[in-house]
Structures are given as C-alpha cells and as structure tokens.
Length: 283
Image 1: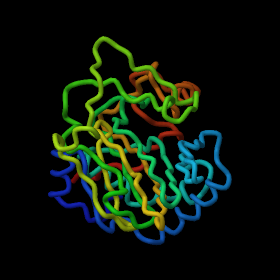
Image 2: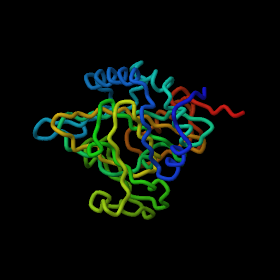
Image 3: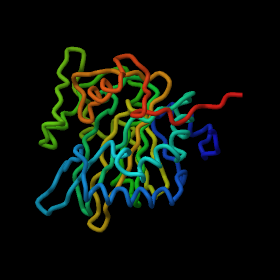
Image 4: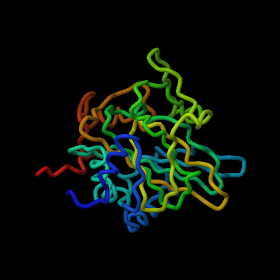
C-alpha cells in the first residue's frame, strides 16, 4: 500500500545527502501508547537477548533488548501495519522494503551513560547502502539527551575499526574484534566535536529520526534527573541489501537464524523472519 505518510521530496533529499532526517508527527499516538505497553512488559520480562548495558553507583540503568517483535503483538502489529515501512522505502528510494530487526532502549531518569559513536552496518549480518534505522522516542526527549548523527558520514569511503561493545558492557555476547589491516581507527567524534556536523533534535512522541545504517551515531544519554528515555528502534532494508555473514557480527548476529531458514551469503532478505512489508506501486 502507498498511503500518504507526510514524507516530502525535501525529506528524501535530506536523507540522501545527510544520511539522517527528523520527521515530525508521522506516527500516531495510538501506536505510541501500544509500544509503551510493550516496552513495560519487556522491561519486566526481558528476552534472552536482553542486556543491562550500564548501572551506575546511584542505581541508574541503561537497558537494551532486541527482536522483540515476535514476542508481543504490540511490536509485531507496529512492524507490519504502521507507516514506517513505507516511510523507510520512500526515504531510501527503494522499490521494496524488508524488515530486519528491532531494538528497544530504556534509560532511567538521570542516566548519564552515552552510547559511543559507531556505525550499525559493520555489525550486521547484511551489507548494502539502502538501509534505514528509525529512532523513535516514546517519551519527550531534549536534543542534549537524544541520539546524535554525524551528517554525511554514511557516504564516507573509509572503513573503520568499530567499538567493541563487549568491553563497554562487560557482556561476552557483545565481544567483537574489528582488527584488520584495511581498517583505520575510528574517528574521535566526541573529543573533536567541532570538526563534525552533528545533528540531534528535541523530539516528541510521534516524531521519528531516520538514519542510514552507515551513518556514524551515538549518544542518547545525559538525562535530567526528572526525565527517563524509552525508544523503539526498527531497522529496514531496501533493494541492494544482501545477506553477509561476518566474523565481527555482534549480537544480534543473525548468521544462525538466517541459516536455519535457508538464507545464504549473498541472498536477498526474505522469509517470515525478514518479511517484505512494503513494495512501491509503480504506475
């Protein structure tokens, strides 16, 4: 279905040029309320992929879970029936969109833990340029506490040695080794912020920040003492994306799941695990 989504030609051009765009009020608050209910359930009942990323001396926590869309109808209905698949397809200028996976983030009030700057695609079990991550806060968030994206970094040619999240979280499932002769050290975005064009926005429930999987991003910490953060993030793949089994895959490494459903290196996404959710109707 190709229904109106509010995505403009300017949005599409911005996404192509900057690798990130913030769309205002494109998700109805009924969807937001359902996702909040799902997040509360998942926080109380984490899946086997759940993580406690960080807890400080004051008990303030940062939590993560993923692939929850197959565990609760709140998430599954959103993936299959919300406007986001079409929005991603329009921004990527794709003819079809497959759902890849979800990520749920929750930080308690006052949390200062920030996700380090990184790129997503080098961790994924796929490869391709037409990718779209949607960072969607379920509560109001100020720009200083929101995700930050380096504009234009999705088109940089250099391949970088990515962050070892296992060293950060202490979880063996997140241990990755990006050591390779063709990789250079990751740029010090945080230490040299003035050198980069870093985007972030004040956002309300219903707003969505969409960014390319190769765009450098991080942050979403520095919360005020009276403000929590809950985010539902969905990952979408377009026409040129293919399965790519990587030794550096961080959980969720999809190699085993993909193999079990018959997907091989170089295949297009498909099957019930990575459904085609939207196709472009061409006249």
